[in-house]
Image 1 (cartoon, rainbow, N blue to C red):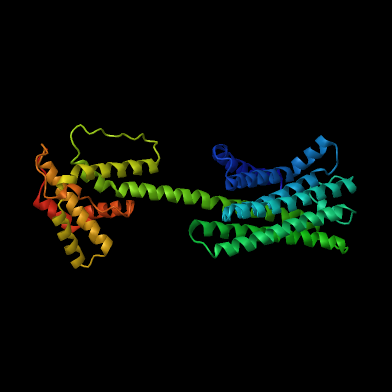
Image 2: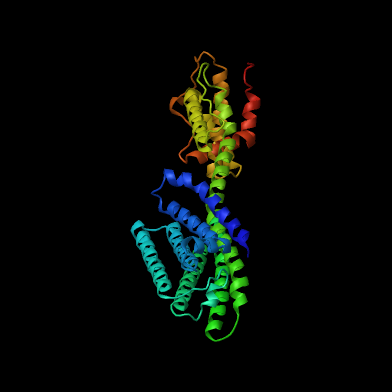
Length: 393
């Protein structure tokens, strides 16, 4: 791998982080959001400082040959810890337990980072190695322990991540499950990276030469594994939000038939709330529901309980379930009330005892959606419209 093979994924992580920073600035107390940003930051740093051109530059700037080795090892170790902490916060649970487990992982891997630095200081690595430090110094005192420690820490994190994410994926559905499976797939590459690195290092310990595994096979595996794992963390968050937005816009559109129906009977001079084109979908849905309920209040004196009860019994007799029968009955009552109100522009006619009668919306927005659907598709509603056409104008 050359420099650009490292810098491209580093840039991808940095771009993802840039999109997350505004949310972090407004909600920096959110542990999940902090964990995501920490992971993206460390992933970008690992790729940046592991690139051979950066390794040479850091060694030259500091004047210490091979100082990049412990720096990269420490970043990889911190990245491993950030993945574990992110999964702990992502899965949730009692806040105190989540914080306690996160602190344990952070403390454990912080100790390993300190140990890596101490071992490098105690050892001697005078010959600069940009690509094969692990195998070149595999038998050097203290360097050997430093290399083995960082590989062991990375391997433990990978095994724990695979076990945690796979077990969790069996308990959930939807985008979260897809993301967890992607993370597991990415960490399978990380385990393969560990296997190739360890094989090359152990071969050196035993007097053999498998350096190509460490120098040429392991780095692409690590890069691919990190990218896939990061994608697994991002996919559920992004896709779930997109799915929620789609569902909200669908609700807004499906409420359209009922909203248009009750707007017909709105009194002259009723102020109309205009939403800006950039208004959030959630706000639009709330406004549309508010308009519908205001319409019900305007139509209240014209609601006919007897008509509703008859429509309900007819729908139930035709085999409709309870919710559908109620929605059809309410839709029939609303349609008839709209026509009655339009035929009484002066507001002089009050039907029966309908003053306190309103459509049944005890189930919240779902009831409004059912009524709106019935307005479009119920034959009973069409029959009312044919019997009582709206006055011209």
